[in-house]
Image (cartoon, rainbow, N blue to C red; front, side, top):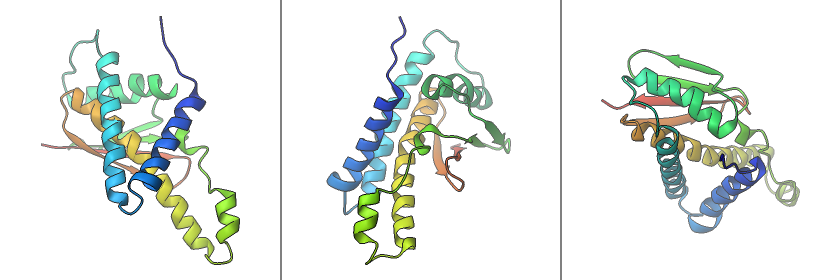
Length: 175
């Protein structure tokens, strides 16, 4: 029996987790909030990979594991594959999702925007939205890092969101 959760529920949990860590728990220390969100993502990715690779043989190389993340793992999480995979064949991989689901609904809260519009300029509001969005991306970075760590690949993962809702995840294998 396959167990699934509604997309809206997952979206809500992720958004509330980011809001809680950034606004309540670590409001004065965004770097601690980012590390904690990444750590939660790491646990989720580690456990999901355990489930999804239970009946598979071990991967023989890094590229095979990355392909698993791009096709099977991403399909289980987001009901679609990664749109583009690039590599320099020296331990750096770029996974691009042209319509990353968690970024399709990101916007600035209009009530906050209208209250502060007289005191703040639009660049400050834009920076605030960019910071919130970047905090949101620590969770999927942690998921990818946890999944690859469970597959025996030590790495670091960063995200680039230069053209929303597109997102690129840069995976650097540690040697």
